[in-house]
Length: 396
Ligand code: 5CA
Ligand code: ZN
Image (cartoon, rainbow, N blue to C red):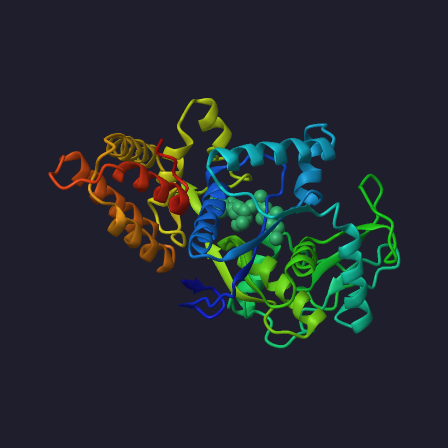
């Protein structure tokens, strides 16, 4: 399996043992799953399927950021209970993923249920000197000193200027008083009036965002796990700090062997994001009786790392493709799919080249629908099984 690695900036062989240890960042459940989220999970699902198909056992871990500022703010805005909001959106996410045939992770862990793991990790970072208390007697929050590990910035490979620009846009608090450096990231926020908090040796409070993933990943996958994944907006600061936390804890550099980031999906040219409100929800499409397999094919028609837009045309093309593939499979007797299956495997092993894999199935379906003389009786069902196993598209 060759995959592009954000950290090294090149496409390289990912040499995995029999068991592959995969961590993909989960949702912050304050709103429904849009096609941007879906694209990221479908991309890593493709990887999961390619590994399994090659005989690996994949230990897949994913978190749910079920307590964080965006969730609390949305609950406040809508006079909703943040716990109920999180539960509702998490349940909807799981339904959406199931409809898209995204294989569920082995461990699906919320920040709240991992609270003890998180506080233990923060305690260790404080004890080692990688973390410190903000110089603020009223709220002595715990921060991670971003200079605690050598070579900070190696995941995203952003310059200091870029990091300083992006940090406040993605949850960072450069102007918080009492910090050693503007770029330092929150590990533990001491209790505030009206906010949820948990008792701990650190004092009552709640966790910062990055440390949640470090604790959940390391405690289930162990040191130097194979791959940390998410959308490209997570490279910095989230994975940068997550890796630095892990490195400060274990002394191993880097925390994960590969860092992979899926491209951003926009709507008609603009990044799809909750704050812009230009969202297409998976659940909306489902409610409109759109076949989720066509949605999956529409997402897979672009390369996983490429930023791209969702358009009505993309979906129409996905629907037409699905129809054609199903017609071919329904013939029963079709051209021998052996070569097709091998081609799809090779395309996936080549940095998850889904457009190449789709084109190979297209060619096979075209040939089948021309009704050639050389066919095998079980061709259709064998092709359907392979397309389902490797691409997650059900054709029957
Ligand atoms: N809970 C954190 C990760 S620990 C979080 O980022 N949650 S999220 O709900 O905001 O995003 C979930 C996943 O969807 C992340 O991997 C994120 O990178 C990805 N994502 C968000 N917006 C888009 C988009 N427009 N296109 C592609 N992926 C996206
Ligand atoms: Zn995460």
